[in-house]
Image: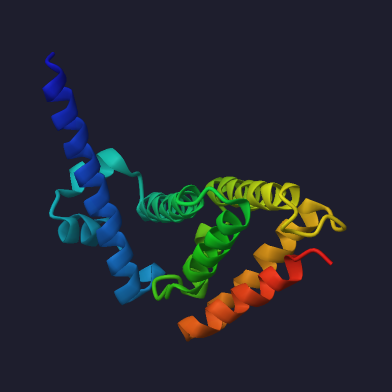
Length: 191
């Protein structure tokens, strides 16, 4: 079979999958977790129910796939922030700023029930491990360059950054997020 045909089929499959994920997220935002059916997802995505069932066995599987896509996109944004600069302290700053702003993003679709349902899956644990490794690595580079304190183990500094910047979720102003990042970075400076 020609290569073009395979690429076309794959892009079609991706488009159908993405449409279903987008439709599910929009439906949950409007109706809540319990108010979404496979029929509604298929209708809003513009596909047949039988087609939707070829991709996902149930609503929960659609929502987990949507969440995994969101988490992956966030991690990709953090990696892009890291890769935009070469200098160790600037890389650290770029990653922490990006993480704080991602933590602050409005998550209207992420009500308590949905968060509880989605955060029990293994993809969340894997993503959290990747996030910790990323922060750990940029911190290690900044410690090595002498720009971050070396009297505290990097693993502890990693936890400090993640916990401190998770406070950005409660901040409504961009300036407040910037102040939180500055405060976090101040705590990382060498004595």
